[in-house]
Amino acid sequence: MTDRVFVIGGGAMGLSVAIELARLGMSVVLSDRGQQDGGSSWAGAGILSTLPPWIYAEKISRLALAGMRAWPSWAEEIEQSANISPEFWTCGMKVLQEKDPQVAMEWSRMHKLVAETESGNIWLPAVSQVRNPRLLAAMKETALALDTRILPNCTVTGFKTENGRIVFAQTTEGEHPADFFVLATGAWSGLPLGNVLPVPNVRPMRGQMLLYPPGSHTLDHIVLHDGFYLVPRRDGHLLAGSTIEDSGFEAVTTPEALGTLHKKACQLLPSLKNHDPVKSWAGLRPGSPDNLPVIDQHPDFENLWIHTGHFRYGVTMAPASSRLLAELMTGTTPFLDPSPYSWQAALERRWQVAAAC
Ligand SMILES: Cc1cc2nc3c(=O)[nH]c(=O)nc-3n(C[C@H](O)[C@H](O)[C@H](O)COP(=O)(O)OP(=O)(O)OC[C@H]3O[C@@H](n4cnc5c(N)ncnc54)[C@H](O)[C@@H]3O)c2cc1C
Image 1 (spheres, helix red, strand yellow):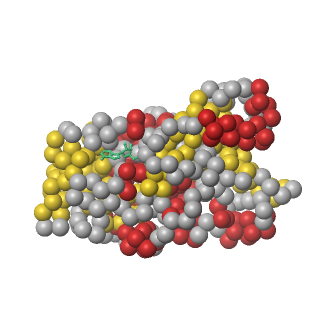
Image 2: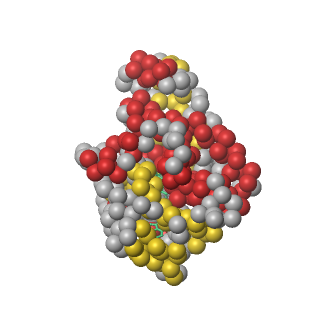
Image 3: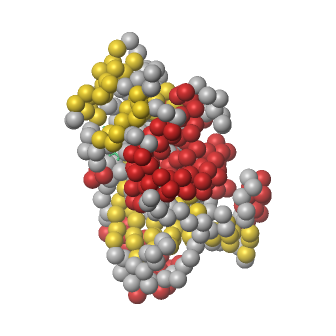
């Protein structure tokens, strides 16, 4: 009999795992309560890399690099099945005024990431990007093409549980029984959901973003300087971001942060002084200490699986992270060691002071 899966959350992490499981022949239903609440996936910059790669622990790099390597074929597959382009573009990334170019070059050599130095800057030609709203649209269409049922504006409010298993999810659209459940509720996974314990150490981390119009610049690659980035889009728009703010579930922009982002953008590209941003927005990342996600079974319910806490790098990690979760769910040998992403490991992590803008 076909396994039935109920996925909770329609961001990058819910959709990527829905696609993965549907490809394995499972019958998937995905519920999402809607984007108006500040979800992360549509709001992001879509840079497919850690920023910059050499400052992170190996357990983050392993998942991020596996994601980066999987992205070219993953993007092609979803573009073909959805007939919507996620605007995957290998535009490269220049890291300006790197403090320790030797460390950066050595790390890149060890991890087989092509890197070049030029006067204190590091050029990474293989770094790619996607355009988030288009990516989400393409992922939804791909999931639908694989016979996934998507329930928009459907909020999960709790669960009926029995003998250490979930029997059905209670939602605003009725009860949904399944054999497996996947919790991919982003920043909200750090809150209890009915009688299900919250995922340890996940909390919202707001990011604000500015968008400049076509004609405001001639940049054709990503620029990263001291944690701040500029990302040109294929149609000439330019993104400037972002902030990392521990400000609760307030998915709103603030004049101070937008002012700081504009100032930093103008310092890197003086031509922007003559152009007002056309748009700004804020999204809530599923923050986790050290950017480490939880990809594991829930300790209390054997048929509830967790896919959350990817913090700043969920889009980068999505193809690798969803593959890992699907392998754990189906009892297949995982392609990388899952222990750093376990529930237990998340319990043991500690938050340090969050970085600012
Ligand atoms: C400003 C910004 C810039 C970023 N830039 C990058 C980048 O360049 N590269 C990168 O890799 N990552 C980036 N990220 C991070 C990336 O966006 C996240 O790691 C990733 O999108 C997380 O996806 P998610 O599916 O876990 O969360 P979300 O996208 O937030 O999705 C969770 C969904 O669950 C739904 N939900 C919650 N509770 C319920 C419920 N009870 N019932 C039903 N649905 C529910 C929510 O409505 C939401 O739609 C950025 C994020 C931000 C905010």
